[in-house]
Image (cartoon, rainbow, N blue to C red):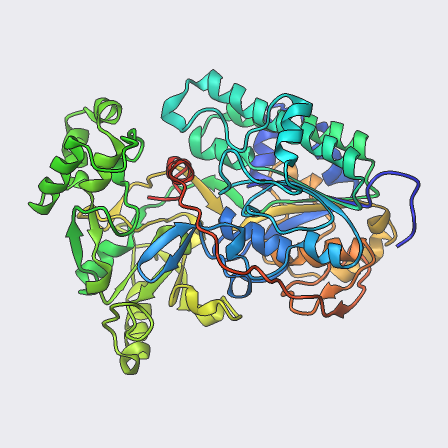
Length: 567
């Protein structure tokens, strides 16, 4: 890699949930996003296909390791040990991220706000963790979070409001802007202090605003305009030779149905249920925005609800009654979160033959003997049970007669690697990602989507700069291939997004390495995008994470619940 007088070599800008439909809506609204527009139009850009499952906690590790979840081992926001669970963190990731690979080649990095990076491993440079980290996270090097706060005045991982019900609209927008400013200021301070060859700055609020303010175009516009300002200041301050913009997935409106997989499986005789109790999967149910009691032991109301649940009065049933009476808003204000959870009807995992553990995994897990602590399905019956479930799910149709799924298949068709057995046994891909999957039990298989906006499969990627300009446009076109079955964009964004086709999330890590004149790791599942010259493959040192570290942070769980990631 040639020496430069100043500035970093490669800057990766992560914009969670960015996609062509969102950009088109922003442009239609007259949003001021000149920096992002220039990045898309001046370089090569195109749609970026996400993985399965296309959700933050699994997709960002896939991006920064270049491997599928079967190799890096993170399939969701939750990690399972038997029937128990915890929120994932960096110790669950079995593959080394880009910054550790670069450290092995003598290059330094600054990484800010990337999800699932806490607790960090040592490397040359600095890291401030992102999503799933605690509010006061351990960064790298030791004491760096305090240094950043002393320099810029404050730094937070999450917005000040705990959830959509905890703040007014203007307050929430102000909190988003504050958070985005912190991201940019922290990154620029660290880049100036550590002078890295590689920088990675991620913005998460571009996703959160759709979960917390669905359909609020003004809030979306305010968020993206604030992001654009931080992009401008960061590019001016850091002067990167090459810039890559990438999103982990897209986002859009859900106009189909909510499909409650465990109700479907209960009707088929696979799922057994129980009521009440403090153990088992998180199941906040329809009243999940209620406040938690914050106590280690159940409060009186929670104990009462748990007893009522054992008698058959669950929060789902209560929820349906209060909704019919028009009292939902009142109940949300006064019912403690713990009471709702204690009273929720839950899947009885040990006594079920198959179940959906949680919706983000996009699939069904079989309670296999010898693998699960109380497995009921003998290994000799595994394939027959799986085949039966695949057939049933493929034949599932909405009340309108549309298929619920566009694809139902064994996990081997999606995941490969030493962690693949930790995945669901059957992967269920919603039809056009317009059907909302849910693991909750409500007594009915179909209903309206709990969230009107959620993740879609297609994000965006853009690249410009020294490593990109080395190829002529004709060469880019010839190497990018033709015949993609994915539209390059919609509306005004279509003219902005051009030059890259058939790009996949797994391609980002090898592309970053190629911009630094480094070969990709041979175990990566992606390849360098055709807008950069390939440097081949080599073996890199594997990751040694040691023992997994427990997250066990109720505040993190609460935030994920508020965003709909934990039901």
